[in-house]
Length: 390
Ligand code: MG
Image (tube, rainbow, N blue to C red):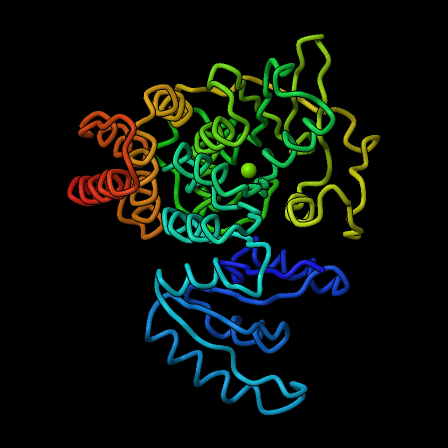
């Protein structure tokens, strides 16, 4: 039985994870949960999964949740009473290091995942990591801490899960190339001269994956792939030159590993995040998820093409950040978060996202080998810089 803390249970990954727990109550038990703003759904999840500890973003949310649970937990709860309710960053860190959990699924979005990730590592929890920003911001520090505390970090990102699965039974030293696949997003075929007309609604319409808003916009700009390049460099301890991004619009090949003998191992499946989430929670076992195989005969062909970095400079930003390291990846990440939020609020246009990130990266006060406070300062600097530019 795995005892889980799920951070971000009302997001797209969190909801899928709870589906898996619901399907396999003999394997998984929820001990602690966190959520952001969707208090109503969170209260229903608490009633169903009966965690001992929960946390929300702020005090207002905690009061709202306490009141909501008072109404909802009146019947059919088999003696279950209210969980302990915390809030804020410290609450998230408490959930990540909760003594009743052995495994932490980190599925909150953005830079907010970093401190809970470090708390989970220090408490020696196994980590299923969906929050790629943690490794982008502070990959060296996080991986060094994980090694020091003997903690396994298992990828939930579908591409990194595919790489991890394609490495099983092989040695990193025999790896030559990681083929990181990308759907290409909704604007793969759109001519660049029409990019200035892209609306929020266009960008939220992803062709193959159903995900949260931040990652859907990141997929439209290909910044999601940029963040994933940096994530892969840290997770698998390889150089950025090892990684080749391939646009694969059908999203059936989730990534591939090429070895020095010319052999390539790919991991394939339907574009459904449950596969990667379940593998991170159950490996080396595979559990029944009631997901069918792709219909290859109907698909007819799987296609691959080079990404267009003139249209999508995010990939160049990421390779640059990866090569320079220091505070640059954290600056790129924070600039992207602020720019994407502004785009979601319709305060800037699509192309402004690239301009803002590029300007922040050009002007950052660079530090090599920053410690945690250096990384957080760089993150703050980039947020303020981009806000002032907006
Ligand atoms: Mg991914």
